[in-house]
Length: 242
Ligand SMILES: [Zn+2]
Image (cartoon, rainbow, N blue to C red; front, side, top):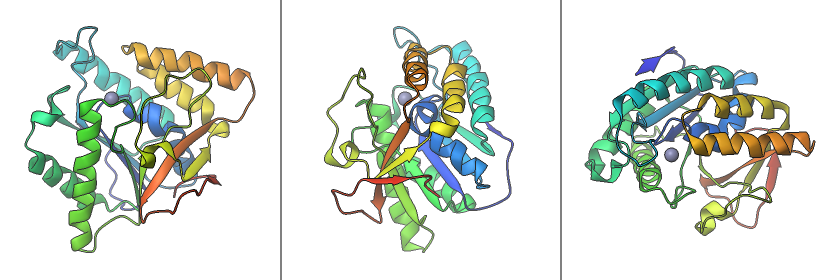
């Protein structure tokens, strides 16, 4: 599925495994980039058909999630969403070099200035997340050999709220080098998460984010820049990634 294609190169691109990963990880940073006039794009490697209660693939759910993704893309202001139909929950079974080829080709056509993907533990240790992040970083290394690498590559380094379940993340993912204040667009992140109504995790995140907004505190998204690397500790509070 590709829709609302845009001929422009540059801007900000995110590459993840499932519809909804983008809303958890970087809806705010993407909305800020869009509002600053940058082209914002998303590449997903699955349609999310295994997002059922017991993980059994359901093609009707894939259709639903396509609609949900379209809804979220609208809230965020994405110019383009590309979804490759690899098996949800089984990305690790796909030939790794094929994933790298596909991601490299997508990036080479669009030449984003900055890319966001998952780090080594994929935030939740979901194997699809880990594979999506690893394949993206291999694709970028390959593009670098042709001088086509993006200027900056970020991995998701969540800024956890007080009640959030914490995962054992790598040092890279645990230490955000860029904390983006998304308070001005927090309502749009909330709206994007709410679009993914078929997913219980997204619904839970809606409640948590709404509580944070109601407390009138600042809301952040965290990222660690891995290319070029930023020496740690280097907490940088910034307004946007590109
Ligand atoms: Zn996911």
